[in-house]
Image 1 (spheres, one colour):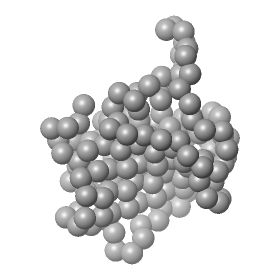
Image 2 (spheres, one colour; image 1 turned 90 degrees about the vertical axis):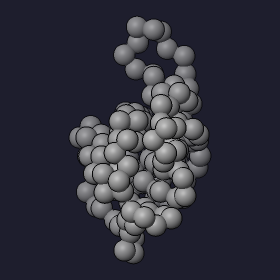
Image 3 (spheres, one colour; image 1 turned 30 degrees about the vertical axis):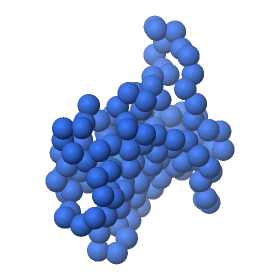
Image 4 (cartoon, one colour; image 1 turned 60 degrees about the horizontal axis):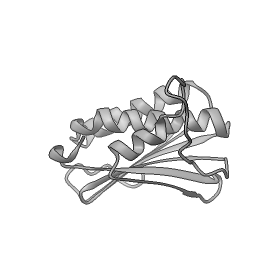
Length: 145
């Protein structure tokens, strides 16, 4: 597990802050990613984003663990009035919403992104990863679902 904080970031009152965590593609990485999100948002004085950001990050990391079966990168990036969380993995397959039966125990993660995030995308990523799935949440407490 490698934690990188470029430069002197995070800057709580600054315009930008970034934190990245590299994880193995295994189930325990979901908990590590949630812990990163929680601690970082507390450091950045954004506790009102913890629930939504932790839930959505858990869904994306779980998808990477189940489907990509490769190393994973989780990045939190705060810029202006937006928090962006990006999960990268080694699969070239884009994340796509699929229809599942109401009783299915899987398949709701991307639907949650659509409901809770102000924006999200799945796109190709540069080496060593092949795909990035990101979502954005507004920093203001009144805008969080």
